Image 1 (tube, rainbow over the protein chains, first blue to last red):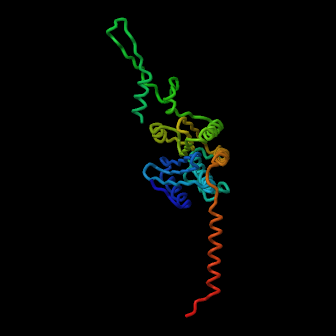
Image 2 (cartoon, each protein chain N blue to C red):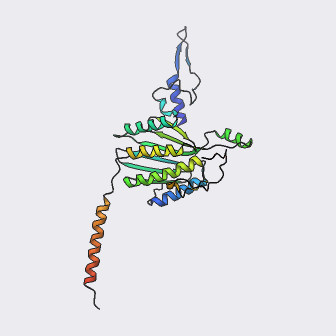
Image 3 (cartoon, each protein chain N blue to C red):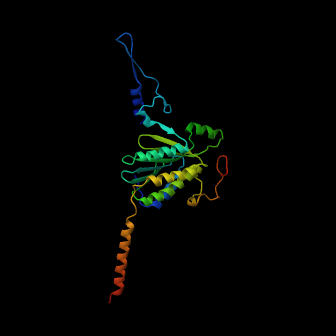
Length: 102
Length: 172
């Protein structure tokens, strides 16, 4: 299993992995309260990226990553996520589907 | 995994039927219940049941999972981009020219129970916020940042060393 040390590296590579294979990629989080451990995994069943931590500050960073993934997975992999923290920009490509406006 | 589940189901649901003549013994095994059928949800087979919930019940169940795993156990949450249709259905839809609608499939388990829900485009902001609240409230056993004090002490030491060097410059 590949444990990545740098958080930013983990984020960048996992988004890249999702975009390259949106059908198969999944984002897993495991939390153990008894040990105070948090492990994140992003995999498309070919490549696997993992990140583990026991730091509270990483939980805050994970929150942002959660937002990124929720947006990507609920809306679609083409969505521009550069403004996720400030919520979505208007430059969204036409949704393949009913093209409903929010 | 599937093999063990099937054999276990067989073991649970095989019935011994005694015929009138004591010499013949018939074991009747009913057709294997399909994964979705809950009528024979015994304690051990419940582990393989994936319960699909609406958003708010899912969040409530997730909270209770966190509550139950404080002493021991883990909570797993999985996010996946999914159309919630089988490959056959997807192929049919694409060949018929119909558009597939994707949502975010969220699954959670505590090792014993499995729950899942689908988050659509409209609900994802709200779900995201509630989910973040739950995590923030529940992930309390992670370590606080104590290294900051050590770092400050280390920086202070470094500064002292640098100032000492400046006060006593090396002469050739």
